[in-house]
Image 1 (tube, helix red, strand yellow):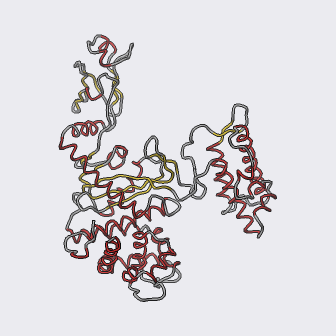
Image 2 (cartoon, helix red, strand yellow):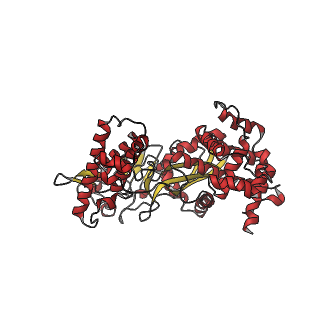
Length: 505
C-alpha cells in the first residue's frame, strides 16, 4: 500500500509536469545559464528541476538519483527516459543546476510556481491570506566539537592545505611547524592525558594554545598566513580561542565559564549554533520556519535561521517572499516567539494577530492587567481609582504619597518607600487584546487553528529529515524550499478535479 501511495505523486508529476513547468517558466529557468560559456544547457532545466523535486520526495543522494534514473521506472516515467540504459543527464549537471538555482534565488520561484498552479486550479485569491507561522529544529550536518578539538581540527585543516600543496605528509608539516600533536587523527589521543583531572585538562589547553601560536609563527615566516585556503582555518582557531578561553586567577589560560554569544560549535559548518527546544532540551544546528496558508493548505514561504537566533529574525525574509507573490496577510497565527517580529511590529490595521498571550502574575498582588489603560487620554487607572499619565514603551510610577495612603497598598506593592510601578510594553494594546480574546471560547477556538502549521512542519520534516543534508544556511534553505514544493504538490494533487490521481492525505 505504501508503494502505491508513493507512486501516485510520480504519476501526477508525469501528467501535470507541463502545467507546472510551463514554457515561460522553463525560459526563466534557462536564464540561469545565460552567462555560461557553454551557452544554453544541453538538458532541459525543467527536467533537472523535476529530478531535484524527486530527490527531496525520495530522500536520495546525487549518486542514488543517478541510479534511480536507470533502475526505477517511476523516475523514468517522470523524466521521460523510460527504458533508457543511461541517465538523461550527468551528476555534474544536477549539481550544477542546484548551484545555479541557489545563486539566482530560483528555488524560491519553485514555491511560487506551485502557488500559482494551485491558484489557477483552486480559484483562491491573495487578497485575504490567513496564515500560520511556526518553527522546528534542524540538526546541523557538521560535527559538534569541544574547545580542544575545535582548535585542533582548524589547525589540522590549515596544515593539511600546505601539505597537499607541497606534496608532503601532514605529519611532516606538523613537525616542521612545531605542532606534532596535530598529525594524528585524534588530538586527545596524541595528548595522552587524564581528562578527568582538572589540572591535566589545564595542561592540555596550554599545549593546544601553544600549538596555535607555533602554527601562526610558522605560517607567518613562510609567507603563508594570507593564503585564501589557509587563512579561514587560522581565523577559525583564533575565534575559538577568543570565545572559549579566558585568563584564569593564576594568569594561565582557562576555559570560559558559560557560553559566549554566537559561539562557533563546528569547524565544518561554522554557521551552526546551540539552540533550545525547551529549557531542558538542546539541539545543535538551525531552525526551519514554515508559513502555511490556512485556507488552501499550501506552504507559502519558508526560512532558515541559526539555532540560537530569535524566531522573529526570519520574518523579514518571509515578508519579502510574500510580497513577491503579491500576497496580503489578513490573519497571522503565531506563537509568542514571533510577537517581536517585523510582521507584527509593522502590521497594518486590518491584520489580525492570533497568539496566546504571556501569562501575567505578580506574586499574589495585583497584576498589570488589573490596571485600566485609557488609550485616548494616555492615562492609567489603578485598582483603587488613582490615575496618572503613561507612555507606550515606558514605565509608570505612581506617586509615593498616593500609594502610602492607599488601603489596597499591601495587595498592590511590596515597596516600602516608593509607589507602584507598571511597565507599558511597546505593543501593550495588542497584548491586552490577545488576553481578552483567549478568555472566550471563540477566541480559544481561533488559537487552535495554528495546529495546522504544526502538521505541515511534520510533513516537511518527514521529507527533509531532522538532520540537515547540507553545510550552511543557504543550501539548507534550498533543501527546505524543495521539501515545501513536495508538500504543495500533494496539496495540488488533492484538489477537486484530479480524480483517481489525487494523492492520499
